[in-house]
Each structure stands twice: as structure tokens, then as C-alpha cells.
Length: 103
Image (cartoon, rainbow, N blue to C red):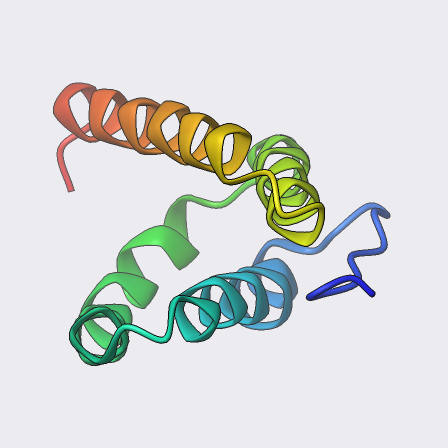
């Protein structure tokens, strides 16, 4: 049974951030059962939401949905190695973009 079901359609940027990413991130963090990670996620989500919400275009939303779906599929398949590799790739991409585009 999937952790989160994602239906890919043409998202609206604000709707995408609130509904899709919040659900995906929360599901992944909760699935970790790591209290420190859960607390950190809740604290930082409030700070980062306005930043990412402003920069989310339809093109970005589609790319991010695909990336997150791949991670969730790996977690759902209990393929920890693949999930870890996909998360590392995702975080590297986010970090690289943050260095290029100042907040």
C-alpha cells in the first residue's frame, strides 16, 4: 500500500506547495519514526514555506513531483538503498540551486 498517493496533473503553484509537498514531506518524516527529524522538520517547514512557495512554477512543480514520487515508490517497495540514493540526489539538486539563486 503506498505511503502517499500522488496524482500528477497540471498543478497550480500555491496549491502544489500546500497540498502535495507538505503531504509528501510529512509522510517521509513521520515514516522515519525519528523524533529529532520530526521536530526539525516541523520547525524548518514554517520558515521555508514562504521561500519555496514564491519560486514554485508549474515546470518546477512537475519535476519535483516526479522526484518525490520516485522516493516514495522506493520507500513503499522497502528499497532503502534506492530511496537513500534518490534522496541524496534530490538534496544535492536543492543545495546546488540554493547556491545559484539567493533567497
